[in-house]
Each structure stands twice: as C-alpha cells, then as structure tokens.
Amino acid sequence: MGTSIPTLALLIFLLIVVGNSNSTIICHEKKRTTLLNFRNGLTNLSSSWLSSWSVQENSCQWIGVHYDNVTGRVIKLDLFGMQLQGEINQLGNLSRLLHLDLGINNGLFVGDLSWISGLHSLKYLDMSGVDLSKIVNWLHEMNKLPSLSELLLSSCGLESVYPSLSYVNFTSLTVLDLSSNLFKREVPNWLDNLSTSLIYLQLRGNALQGQIPVALSNIHDLRYLNFYGNQLNGPIPASIGRQLEYKRNLKLVRSIDLSSNNLFGSIPVELFGLFELRFLNMSHNRLVGEIPENIGSMTTLECLDLSKNDLSGKIPESMSNMAFLDYLNLSYNYLSGSIPSGTQLQSLGEDTFIGNAELCGAPLLINSTKDEESHGSTPVHKNGDESEMFWFYIGMGMGFVISFWGVCVVIFFKSTWRNAYFKFLDELKDRIYVAAAKGEMVPQEIQ
Ligand SMILES: *[C@@H]1O[C@H](CO)[C@@H](O)[C@H](O)[C@H]1NC(C)=O
Ligand SMILES: *[C@@H]1O[C@H](CO)[C@@H](O)[C@H](O)[C@H]1NC(C)=O
Ligand SMILES: *[C@@H]1O[C@H](CO)[C@@H](O)[C@H](O)[C@H]1NC(C)=O
Ligand SMILES: *[C@@H]1O[C@H](CO)[C@@H](O)[C@H](O)[C@H]1NC(C)=O
Ligand SMILES: *[C@@H]1O[C@H](CO)[C@@H](O)[C@H](O)[C@H]1NC(C)=O
Ligand SMILES: *[C@@H]1O[C@H](CO)[C@@H](O)[C@H](O)[C@H]1NC(C)=O
Ligand SMILES: *[C@@H]1O[C@H](CO)[C@@H](O)[C@H](O)[C@H]1NC(C)=O
Ligand SMILES: *[C@@H]1O[C@H](CO)[C@@H](O)[C@H](O)[C@H]1NC(C)=O
Image (cartoon, rainbow, N blue to C red; front, side, top):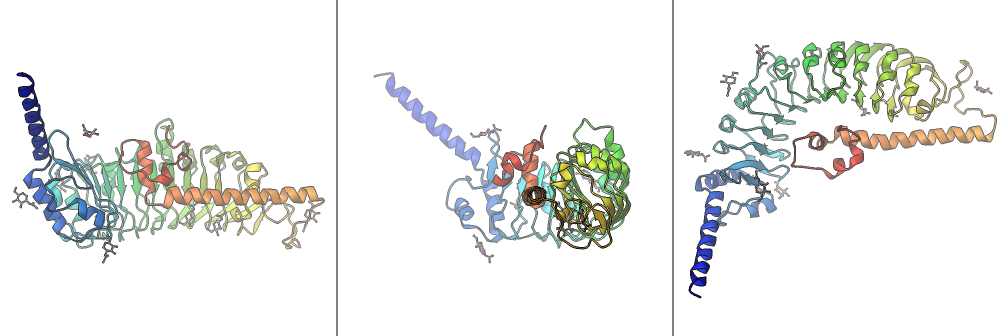
C-alpha cells in the first residue's frame, strides 16, 4: 500500500506533465497568432475547415496544419481545394514551413507577395488558381526560395515570364507548372538553369512565342513536356531527341505535347529515338514532310496524335509493328498511298485516317486500288464473312478509340493527374486521386 500511492501519484504527475508539454509544444502562442492572422485575412471559409480552426479551442489541431513531431513547428499547410476566399498576406512567420498548398481556392488573391521570402525552407509551393495578377515581380519573390523543388502556379493570372532573367536560385526544381497564365513573350531562358533537375515542365495554355529553345534538350531527366496551346513557331529542334537518345536506359521523357502551336518544318528523325515515350501529341501545327520511317522503333508509344498538319507521303510500313499503340490520329494531312496492313492499324477507326484525300485501304472505306470513280461510301464485299470481319474491325476500332480517349483525357488533361503521377514516381505522399490511383490509369509508368 505504502508504495502504490506514490507510484500512482507519479503516474498521474507524469500524465499531466506529458499531456501539458504535448499541448504546449504543439501550440506555441506565436504560431497560433500567425495562423489566426492568416485566417482573419480570409473572408469566406469552408465550413468544415472553419470549425477545425476555431478561435475558442485551445489547440492547434486544425485541418490541414501539420507539425514537426520534435520541434512542434508548423511544417506543412495543406489547404488544397478548401474554397477559401480573401487575401493571403500573413504566413511569413512560418519559417520552417516545407510544404504550402493553397491550390484550387479560386477566391484567394495575393496583393503583396513579399512575405514569401520568410518561408526560406519551402520545398513545395502550390498556389494554382490563386489570383497573383497584382504581383508584377512574382519571379523575383520566388527567387528568394532557394530550396524550392516543386512550384505550381497554374491559372494565377501571371503576365510576365521574365524571358531575359539570366538565372534563378531555385536550381533544385523538379516540377514547374506555369500553365494557363498570360505569358506572351518567348520561352524564358532561365529554364536553362533548371536543366539538371527538372522532370516535369507544364506551360500549356499561355501565348508563348518564338521557338522551342534548344536548351530544353539539355534537361536530362525531363519526363513530361507540355506546350499545348501556345504560339510557338519554327521547327522542332532535332536535339530534343538526340540529346536523350544515348541515355535510353535512364529515366526519359514519357510525354510530349506540342499540339496547337504554329510549329513548322519536318518532324525530326531524332524525336523517334525517344524510346520510352508513351504519349506524343503534335497535332494542330503546320508540320510538313514525311512521317520518319523509324517511327516503328517507338515500341512503347501508346498515344500518337499527328492530326491537322501538312504531312505528306506514305504511312511507314513500320507502324504496323507498334503493338502498344492504342490511340493514333493521322487525320487531316496530305498522306497518300495505302494504309499498311497489319491488325494494329486496321483495328483503328476510320477517324484515325480521315481527311487525307489520297489515302486508301482499310479501315477507310476506299479501296486500295486507286479508282477515280470509287467515291461510293459503301464497300463491296464478296461474301457475308468478309463483311462481318469488316464491321468487327470497325467495332474494335471504336472500342479502342472510346476507351483510349478515356485514358488519355484522364491522364493528360485532368489537372489532378500530375499529382498522382508524381505520387507514383516517388516522393509525393499526400494527395492521391482515386481515378488516377487505379493501376490501369498509369500503366507501367514506374519501373
Ligand atoms: C511575425 O513575428 C514578428 C515578431 O515575432 C511579429 O512582430 C509579427 O507581427 C509577426 N507577423 C505575423 C503575421 O504574425
Ligand atoms: C463560401 O464558401 C462556401 C463553401 O463553404 C460556398 O458554398 C459559397 O459559395 C462561398 N461563397 C461565395 C460568395 O463564393
Ligand atoms: C509524427 O507522428 C505521427 C503520428 O504520431 C507519425 O505518423 C509520423 O510518422 C511522425 N513523423 C515523424 C517525422 O516522426
Ligand atoms: C536570388 O537571386 C537574386 C537575384 O535574382 C539575389 O538578389 C538573391 O540574393 C538570391 N536570393 C537567395 C535567397 O539566394
Ligand atoms: C545559370 O545560368 C547562368 C547563365 O547561363 C550561369 O552563369 C549560371 O552559372 C547558371 N547557374 C546554375 C546554378 O546553373
Ligand atoms: C492532341 O491535341 C489536340 C489539340 O491540341 C487535342 O484536341 C487532342 O485531343 C489531343 N490528342 C490526344 C490524343 O490527347
Ligand atoms: C483525329 O483528329 C481530328 C481532328 O483533330 C478529329 O476530328 C478526329 O475525330 C480524331 N480522330 C480520332 C480517332 O480521335
Ligand atoms: C473494291 O474492290 C473490290 C474487290 O476487292 C471490287 O470488287 C470493287 O469493285 C472495288 N470497288 C470499287 C468502288 O472500286
């Protein structure tokens, strides 16, 4: 008895001390003030988040706020898609913050970004959808974040891309998303400085002009390159393929989208030396010349869109070997001759080849033997079996088209895809999107 009472007292004492130290470590007054200041700058908070950030509650256990277990400092603020509104201007004191995600809160704006230099440990910054249109010197502010590894500023209303800024400090950047802003000048040359680290470069939906910089081919580990919907002109630099070819066993470009620009010239043979490319879209440009014969060596290609260009000549025989090709679009060019026979190409729909006046053979409803009178759209078949086979192939093609459209759209055009992709790749452990997390959406993307 004599020993059990002190033991009990000690236990209670320990519980109190541990309990107290936990809560004091976890909720410094300064930290709390900073967070409350931040919250007070917002005019409309989503209800679930607001209740977790209650002013009365004597705790910092708020949704989206993560602390370092040892120091109790705020290291991560994840307020992605919380429907927040108002101005952000009060986070500069969170000096140990590594991860700041304010993405997809379309009511947020920043009037003055100078506080961001206080976040000098920051590795991940997502402000996609936040209105930064008032920030004329955004890049100079970002330049004060030397540890930055991922920078996502899609749809921020940014206007200047600082094409002539000669260098940037954040040279360990791996992910850069500046899509859907208002950039009108050339592709910036400060990308040069990122060449050793960048693996994901997303610039679609701007109005960037000039040529694709040759320097991009120095980006050794680039796996995703998207310039869709800009106003780039000039030829595609051959070096984009050449530089990477000899590194074929390393992690290479998996996806290139240069569609809807004004690119001209021929398709560089070297481009088809990118052996591990999965997705290539160069449609809606003014590319001329023939499709290089070595295209057949791209055995991993799953999606190839060359539609709406000025390509001519024959479809290379080697294309019938492209076993992984699920989506192909060669329509609206000046291709001629007959479509190489082989189950792969014949199983695609007519939509793959339409708009090439001199192209013939299955699956087009034009006989291979050129006959000027053969403008009838109904093919003539000797017997029912052939006819059935014909429609079977058409049906199969439709299946491929529909299912692969689904995959392409989900993978490449959902803004959420990139997250899942990099989650699969390596470090991102946070957000997983159900759709993309399903194995079949990112087939064998990771070795
Ligand atoms: C940041 O900290 C300084 C000094 O500790 C304080 O004066 C300032 O008000 C704080 N700023 C915010 C936004 O909390
Ligand atoms: C404020 O946020 C709520 C969600 O919590 C949203 O339904 C509402 O539309 C927002 N108000 C405005 C004016 O956007
Ligand atoms: C911090 O604690 C949580 C829960 O107790 C744990 O899941 C996490 O791994 C810890 N993090 C570190 C860096 O120790
Ligand atoms: C980053 O570069 C700028 C020049 O653009 C320089 O003035 C600044 O000191 C650098 N900042 C850091 C944190 O390295
Ligand atoms: C960045 O680019 C500039 C100009 O090309 C060069 O002088 C500088 O050494 C580069 N810095 C890094 C870290 O690559
Ligand atoms: C290729 O790009 C065009 C326009 O830029 C787009 O309409 C088309 O859907 C894309 N193709 C694929 C397979 O994603
Ligand atoms: C190929 O692209 C053209 C125009 O870009 C489009 O009309 C056609 O439907 C596409 N074909 C397939 C199979 O998606
Ligand atoms: C198409 O080819 C078949 C035989 O393969 C032939 O009987 C038929 O007349 C041709 N049709 C046209 C319109 O040339």
